[in-house]
Length: 319
Image (cartoon, rainbow, N blue to C red; front, side):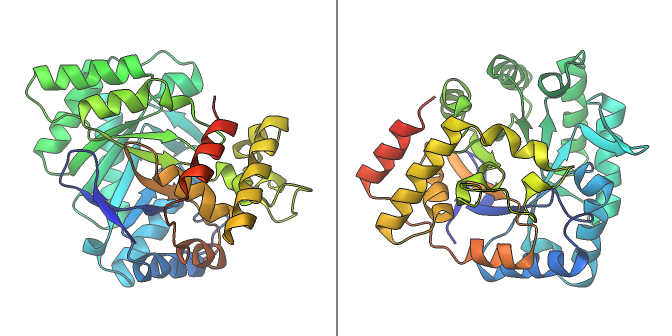
């Protein structure tokens, strides 16, 4: 697997990372164990974790694996702060007390003394709630950096204007600036190309693509039906897929399937290879729910697409 430095930082990540959204709920411990092993065997190192994943159970599952079966230093842990699973519901808070408490709890759950990358979630876009003042959030980040509890940080789900404000404030204060944007980015969701991608190039930040297969839609498995074991057939995961099952995404997916057939590759391979060829993209965070899915994913080559195929897919999927 290819590795690159995330943005202009010294943090080196594999181009394919593992998301743990379903761990502890839909992905059992044995499958999680096998998924990590497959990631290492493929030369990868990046893991995405959040206190809200798996209804709060994912951090404990990952922590147990790191303590009993794997070496912490073999992995780059990308952890989220902003959303927590409390009292059987997901609650958002990026205030100083909440951020520091979240990081400290993650460190305990993961049996580690530091997080390689902390991703701050922009809550106002997802929930409509009144945002916490930027200064308060960034003061908490500065404290965590000084304490060595996090090595780097990035932003997720922030509008471009606010990401630029944060970057400029931290630079003016001679504090470390964010090194990455986390964003939903795929052939079916290219909204960030308008502003966040150009700003990432200007500011030296890398891009982490979340949902690079659009909840599995770009694998082609939803072309004719909804498989009974798929996300779309699962009540608590259906909303991660629903918006990609309309006419336009279906036509884009058909173009991907056609390109894959012509190249003798899979739709998954073609979709991810296209995304890895986009400016500023350093890594794709995929969420295989089973060991078998992880094995199928990580054995792919992700070789560069022929220029004509890349251009056709870019044209058919253009926003």
